[in-house]
Length: 458
Image (cartoon, rainbow, N blue to C red; front, top):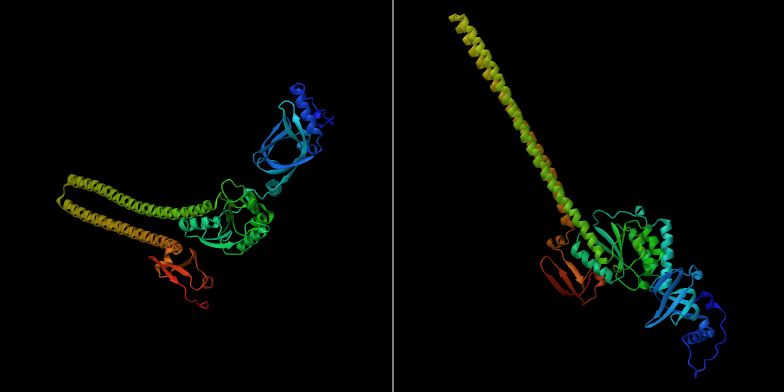
């Protein structure tokens, strides 16, 4: 079927004589003329969900679905460039006219225009804002701030009692208890929610925190669209602290993930990320301690080797000196024997004896001097090793004390208690009604009590 025939002015559909047998072509032509002459079907607007979107020879084909009903649609190449961005699953309103495909004997809608509806309109906004931020370079990695190497205080922006915040807080308490969470509750969906989230980000920027986490659980495309709105994205870019985005489930794609300094697929994954940071920091402490021990062993081994070398060199020097003196003594003795005068021989022997005594005294003195110097060097090396070991031990003790101070169990060991109401920590007595049953976590076990009165001035 040629394109021109679909837009030609239809001829009046003459009725088929029922008493005669008709050919397939005649029946198909008749149905085609009936559809194209119908005023209702020649200018119709149809709403449905796009499915099976595909291009062929420059034309675009798709199905328009609503529940079990399916309508075949075609957009000729001349109109394709006029369409908004389309994809499977979005809701649209198509306007066009009906005809019948002669080859397949099926009716189809020749689409002249498409209007996005519902999620489709939101998707168009998503693409427009994505293109705008892409041109501004806000998705570039070079623009983004590095996450802190060891965060200890994090602001959490989420819905009050939301599933995402609950997953994040529970996992953080279990795997990263060294991180203090400052929760900033806010609306995360509905009209104007993007203003509330942006205000929460600005509030977090004014706090003394190491990072900001924006999180919420999964939901429909419309309910998550708050995090595709420009006020939220601008606030993330302008934040004073690094921002981590953990919105929805793994399959959700949001612009907040693109502009944030770091993103995680789910709130639980964000908590695992902070836990891994802590584990890496503790591992660095262990590696530093191991390196220090290895260094001290190397210093001790080197000192011992140098001492042994000095002692060996001293022994070799003394042996060479004694060997030379013996040679000289043999030479003197040879000369005495050759001259043989008894007096001369006695005198020279006496001189030789004195010389030998002096040499032995000199050897002992030199040996004592070298030994004293070697002992002094060993003492100095021991004092240096003790000083280095003491200094590094103090540093390790300080690091261990800092880590112990971050342990939530430490206050309990000192006699403090963690008071909770319905599973949440109590920070303000005014928030607990009289008669409420509270729990107190102490070092060993839990206590339950009923509130009979409050002193708000304490």
